[in-house]
Length: 525
Image (cartoon, rainbow, N blue to C red):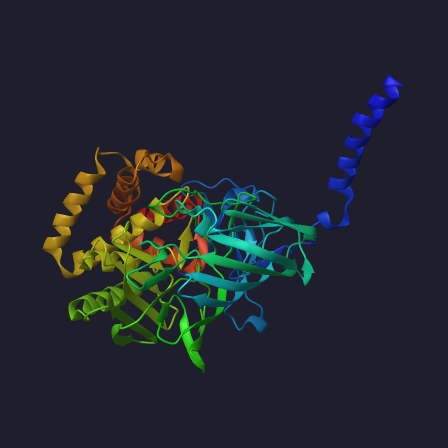
């Protein structure tokens, strides 16, 4: 009896688990092509375009290459860099690599959010219904979905966002909430390229405080207010570092947004998407918004009595909103910074950029896609405006993991600010540069800086420690890289990153690959 019991309790569960993992039909991803369109995927490690030629990582093809480790695509697949007649000579096909389950190669599929929400300003409550169309972009199946609930991760906001119902493809779904995480189980695996529809009914409470989510002085600042699909990295979902009032304790991947907000008629909205119209409904107004292109998240600010001023730059309308009076010099600074970064880093694809004063207790400014908040609580300067405008390129258009590498976007925004002043106010540039280097502390090599900067968000002991590393040492990293590569080579490398990783997320290891390639390539010239 004991022997038979041992077989039942130990052997049979092992056999069952093996069959479950290996034999279930939905665990096998779809057959992957051998070649893909160059613009259709993000490959790990990345290909690199230099001039008219595409270079690929040699080790992916079993080839040893000196220097940067990259070889021309034409040497690997002679016909691979040629376009077919139907491509009109514009599309390049590359071999598919990095398709293992732990690799981060993926198709450029962007989710679509449709959010319908109503605000009760007296109760400071938003009731919303979110519909998400999600197509699995990875080369392996998914067995669950994870959503971050940022409003539950702020200090004191444990129950700010509650979930009433979740459905998947119109069927009730099993879910559970763990603090700032919403875990949704899938009945069967979502294979590579397969699409599902998720719907979530939720309620969000807006606390009375001058913060990223809160109401203060009759201004509603609303960010992190809905369930946001978590990004994935290394084959797992990425959560949120809760309980911190500074930095970026969560990040998100790009998606399309269509929003309907029903608000009292006395409130005006400035948002991180383009307003597409209003519809008067008694004492309420229905505002509609579209993101036009993918953005990281949707945030907005509500208030009354705004003073506004706008300037059209090509297809983009830049608007500043103030509570009392518009300061022309601030708008001029924003416009000039926008033009400079558009020329230096690459095109800005949206028709809107809104800058608005808002009560923020812990920040001088805060960036959202197409929306910049300027703190009336702490005050702000032209330097803050320039830094936040730069974030439209380094954060929104090209994102990064703010939990493990916050120095990428913050360091690049600081470096971009220095580039601006180097061009327009050289004397101020020299002073800012000296101050940044001094605040960064001990003099370190590029290698030492890289090791120091790539650490967990939660490893920083304080906001001062975080800002010193992510902002100051991050900027020094780019100044040192500029010395190593030269201004032209560094600009070319970062412009390529803006091209290849537009609406995507840049990992430190990919960044190092690209910088090393351009550094080596320009040395040969």
